[in-house]
Length: 448
Ligand code: 5AD
Ligand code: SF4
Image (cartoon, rainbow, N blue to C red):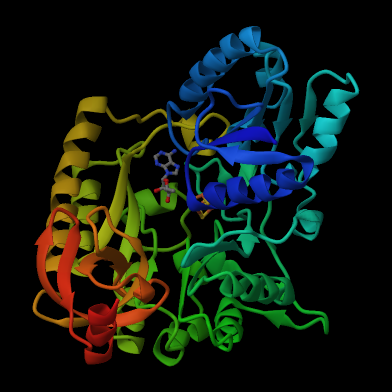
């Protein structure tokens, strides 16, 4: 057996891609390992979304080049969005790279390894043959209770700050049949929750064998028919693509969890316009209201950027106001960083670093307060928890509420992969603690 180490940067889609690359290389005799030391092949699955990512990858490559001097047979591959963006520049700068593959071409890795072995030197693949990728991947071997499943890739939105449309290419959706088949295969290996992934997942438009187009609401309904799948989530969504059917599905599809990651980016219409978000702050707020009307207990998370070029104090306050109005359960917030090749990178009215820092701190303090509030609101309640794995302490289990909060309880391992009601008692840091109170489960626990 040869050892394969994959280092994953960035988002869940990259985590999914890394798992699929491991599946793809398993038939070639590669077994996954968790350190670069002693590996026969190292893949860096890179992310380009924010600053300094490329620097980190280059310094990691420096270390790998050193390792390669000691072990000349070591294969070094760079995958993901930085590979796509930098292409030949990267292979020229780092001769130790054997293979460079973009996110839409990694199904070609086995062939690239063969070409490299035949002495072709550095092998590059950075096309966008999106249509063929999923047809060439072997079945996933994931055994997680909560499993990722990529259904859509790419982005046609072109927010002016974002590299994704350039690195992941145009929007493309997998067929509903292939998604449902993969979900069934995951369920047969123990998955009880499916997290549908896509850069713009709610723009999903899959064509079935009869030529019919399925939107995400229909896909979620199809997946809800799979008995062993108990929970369905999806991320990341664009406000513009939240159609009526998907909003209604949050009220009608019981397996669709009441939690939605819906990036807002800013609360100022001027900034939203400059970002080319194609919605106003009011559009966003009305959408939140409609989702709450469909599913009153729905919780929201979001992404916000502070310090976008031209962002005034009033613009930033508009973001704070929007956050206060919505009350998020969880949120990610970032300082704007210019990404090479994106329209906003050339903007003149840049915001001073100190101002960005100040705004980010104020926003994060507010978001943290809201997150605590959301966690505290379930204390004293009985909540259905899907158990995913054992915890660190003996006899401890870790699961999640419908609102994605981690919960720790003491209970039998047989609960892993099942949903049981938990009486939530207290909150520590970001985790809830409680006790099982379903009598049949307690009996099982006593017998275990
Ligand atoms: N600067 C800062 N944050 C960014 N994001 C994307 N591009 C940038 C950038 N250039 C953030 C957005 C997006 C999240 C994944 O990363 O908020 O939703
Ligand atoms: Fe980037 Fe905007 Fe597309 Fe999201 S919708 S991936 S932020 S361009």
